[in-house]
Amino acid sequence: MTQTARSAGGLVRKIIAAVILVPLAVIIIAFAVANRQIVTVSLDPFSAEHPAASLTLPLFALVIVLLILGVLIGGIAAWLRQSKWRRTARRLEREIADLHIEIEALKRTAGVSTASVNGPAAAPERLQLRPPMR
Image (cartoon, rainbow, N blue to C red; front, side, top):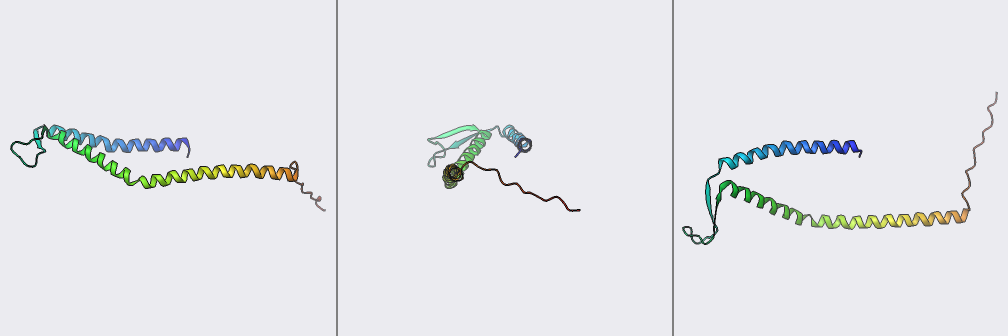
């Protein structure tokens, strides 16, 4: 892939990211402005009136924190599911490196053995043509 093709791909990726991220940021800011009321989150399932553990924070902060936690949990789950493929990729990369080393070793030994058997490489015989007849 040429440098210009790579830079064009990077530019397209940046434009797509901007087209997605700018409206998403506007939506998040509008949500935060519209939901500034304070809510109490109870972490005690036994006492609703006097919870042992509770949080009091704006609604938008609670939603954003929960979204971030969801993204983190989803990312960790995806990373764990892909461990088999990463392990296979590492194994195949090691095999490729070993095969490259083996090919280079075979090229060196083949080059040494042909030079020692035939002596110095001779120029190929030239084709000789007769002049055209009239």
